[in-house]
Amino acid sequence: RSGAELARLFPVAPLEVVSLGAGQGDKDLLLLEALRERGVRVSYVPVDTSQALLEMACAGALSAGLPAQGIKADFTNPTHLQALAAEPETPPRLVMLIGNTLGAFDPIVEARDLARLLRPGDTLLVDGEIYAGDATVAGYDNPLNRRFAWAPLNAVGIRDTDGELVFEAADDPRLPGLHLIPKHFLAGRDVEALLGGEALRLARGERLAMNHSYKYAADTFLRILSDAGLAARWQGRSDDQRFLMVLVSPA
Image (cartoon, rainbow, N blue to C red):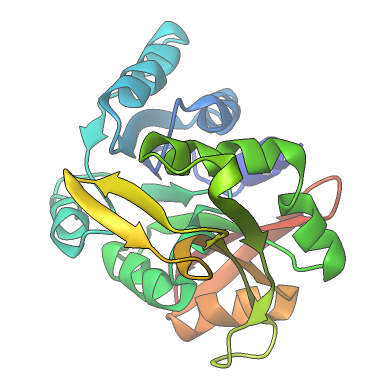
């Protein structure tokens, strides 16, 4: 449904779709096909740090009859992001950052960086997870997520019996309605891990910070985009109301 709604916002003309952190491109393909049905002449540029996922994303688009060319890059690296800037002859672009990927970084900084990537006439499709208090934390602190979270610890020699994996909720003081779900490993005994060939020693009671995820009040998510110089053209919620997706363009 959202794909068809979004497709109607674009003229029947060439459009380059650049997907940042594309992964295997399954979600991208839904919108690409909706744009094609609309008559938009789409070309697909998935961007990811994984060569294997890039090949899957390109293969999916090519098998659907859509032109595709992947770029292996880390869009959070300023040099890589600058290299993704459009050439003068590049048609209008739709840049996509979906799957709450913005929340894996500093959304305030990242939104400003993404805004600089856009030219007049370009658009950005981005989404964020809406914060729902204890329900949001419970959505992360579950057996499946714990299994995934333990994997990198196990890879460096830290075992489940060595300590505890702790999920928390915190407020980011920069903006009301900006929330952070960080996690850390709390050593239950003296632990030694091997990182990059070097030993990391944790004494009992010490913490090892891990990755985090930002969540938002809906108005705060829109404010972050607006403060970055981006104007909302369309917005929609997921069926479960957990995610807000917004199409923006340079203000």
